Image 1 (cartoon, rainbow, N blue to C red):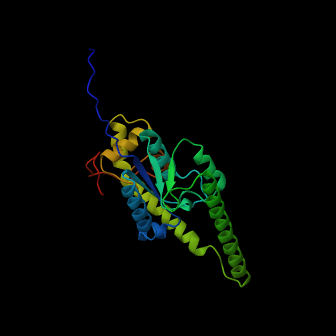
Image 2 (cartoon, one colour):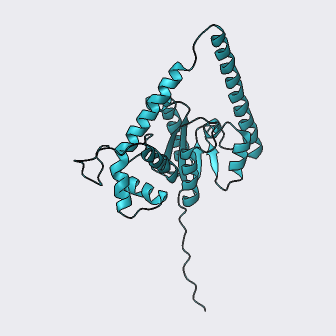
Image 3 (tube, helix red, strand yellow):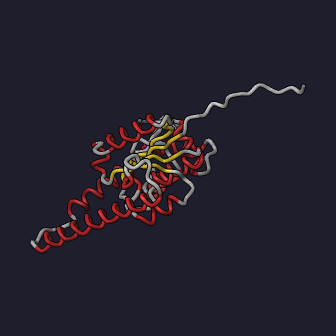
Length: 243
């Protein structure tokens, strides 16, 4: 009688998930309005399906933009880890039918917690409603601005101040990271991915509190290249000077 090895039971590993949380304004990002509700929804879903949340990406950007660094980083992470992208609502991913359709054909699985069992047709319909809602909000905003302008209200003053303040904050944050970036280069890091890994290993996080990816690292390097180098005399070179 030929020898038959004993049967071994294969243990199914939990499905990995990457959470993507998005708000449209900096005020929502700083205050946490909307983010906590999204985080609670995706966490509850992953627990219910027996999965494991391996990363969370938080982004403060408009849903109209297709080249969002945080989203691109989250999708790249999903591809490298064979993970599923999880979002609280489909409109947090995008308010554009064509973009959602391209993601469905892009090789990364994603699930919207508000419609976890939606098929391709239903996702197209939901994306169409989200795009229509975006267009309606835009039309109402433009009409309100035109009415205010007709009354003699000077537009854009607050927006210009906020844009200047946000840019100053971003530049200050980039300058704070300058010693860590220089340390990464001194350690032999030559690519955006290597510098990102060096920052993550050192405990650094983005302004939104997420891990670094090549896209977010590139933005910091561009800001450092556009501004004078900060005076880092007296710093412990290569070590984080502030958290």
